[in-house]
Length: 549
Ligand SMILES: Cc1cc2nc3c(=O)[nH]c(=O)nc-3n(C[C@H](O)[C@H](O)[C@H](O)COP(=O)(O)OP(=O)(O)OC[C@H]3O[C@@H](n4cnc5c(N)ncnc54)[C@H](O)[C@@H]3O)c2cc1C
Image 1 (spheres, helix red, strand yellow):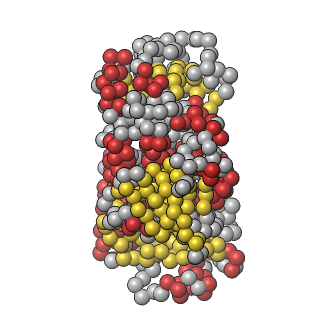
Image 2 (cartoon, helix red, strand yellow):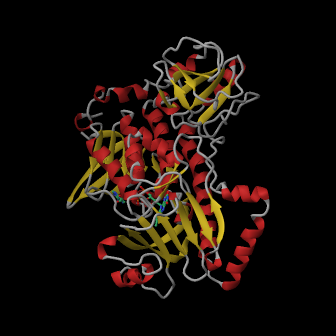
Image 3 (cartoon, rainbow, N blue to C red):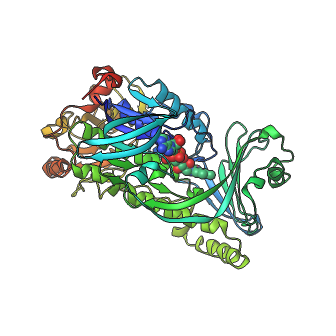
């Protein structure tokens, strides 16, 4: 008899690890399949956004990663003669984490990998390569090869998180649309950086050899150089050539153990034509590939995993409609494609070398920066727009508005005080599933049975200057008015999705409309149990390796 899983995840790069851990933490029977035996160690992502930290916090690895990261950073763009064209920094984050952080992808991968290995509810197969995939109305099967042995795993759903060359993507017949960036780059990660540097990534379009310089903590420094057509990748990664690139411009000396890693990479600007084929979904680089200039590839992948997994948890528990599963592509593909475009555009600006083009570029940037609105747009990095999921699992508000709450956008994370007087970020009180936040009015206002049926956590949020009431469980108070600003005396409700996005803002008069709209995605009538309660009791389900269905 075949051992049957709820979800199979192919690929334990950062995105597959995040997806598998989110599923396993929710009690979903998950198997993660990885062809390597150790976590990835390549010099790749270095810029992490607040929203990614929000997910990593849920997985319990955010604090350890922050200790190894340079928090709250920005970007500086330099033109000809190394003159500063633009200094940019994202506006302060609403999400309770630094807006932009310089981190180290191998450290993140190791933290996630170790959590996955230790997770009792997750089956993590290493040295196991997915080599065939078939699916039908009953399930999806993956042939996994280790050495000369093969076995077949079957599940209800499959997540392809197997990177840019995704086997899953090919096996389920999804194409990638787009192009390959002609310019190659060499990434050099250094140790023992002696200079104190400002917390900015530097993009130097000097018209000669464009380069990018990114400081880190604990003496780490990344330098990326564009290569010219006639430069051979093997030769450019030899110690002699790396020394020529780095000394004396960036370092007076370079010992051999100062170089952590050096690799040449080719960037693509491509998006999968669809993110779903039947029971298979693509996430991360399997779904989109982009040049690194906007620092978005891994961030987009973490958003994919966070978005898809709560929908699959609903599917496993019987509440997901086809529309909910299709909403993954609706919500994520548009934003992924937008990030590919912005990455390509920033790359074109940085990589220009033609004398006329670089002069025009510098003049245009200086001139448009004189227009206050354009300057604000560029200086606050608004060109990297956050996702907007109003076309997906959302019910637009009619006449009800509240503080910084916007339907389709990530919920802000203010600091709140609980009944014990402890102050923490709001996320600590949201739980893993849906939350129905009540703002204003007496706690525990009557609401439709739908919310209980979808397992929504009820939480009452009080304004800092609200009428004094006895602190109770299920009630928290903002320390400064963020979500509660503009709240009146009548209750207003915020339906918060498991991924911390706002699905609806409504009052009692608008509740039925919201319930009907959300029921088209999460159907309380077919939903079996509260999936998230299992996460508290991971052993209440039979362990994977002994279960047959
Ligand atoms: C130079 C550079 C700089 C970057 N900078 C940034 C940045 O600042 N910010 C940012 O957000 N992103 C950045 N990125 C992008 C980021 O590194 C990627 O988006 C990220 O690594 C994608 O993760 P993934 O898990 O989707 O894929 P991968 O990391 O490629 O992981 C895929 C995994 O699947 C496994 N696998 C593949 N095939 C199979 C199979 N058949 N069976 C089993 N396992 C399989 C692989 O072994 C691997 O472990 C950068 C990339 C580069 C190259």
